Length: 87
Image (cartoon, rainbow, N blue to C red; front, top):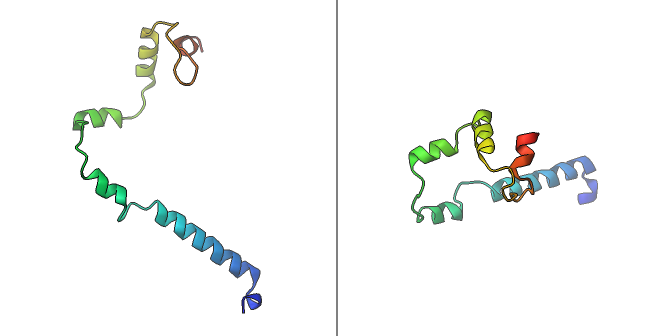
């Protein structure tokens, strides 16, 4: 009978079930998206991928920002280059 089981054990069991379901939901093994991705051809070269996954370099960011017109249209974050150039 469930009433005979201490609450701490029940709570731990519920936690484990929830955790396992979450982990399995986002696990990459036997995932349908992996099968779908096999049919999509790559459009990024290995060299481009290396650049895209490289570490952020503040000097490159500064150089790019200061090359932009300060009143250029704002990005989705509503901040135009002037914000980054001044602050």
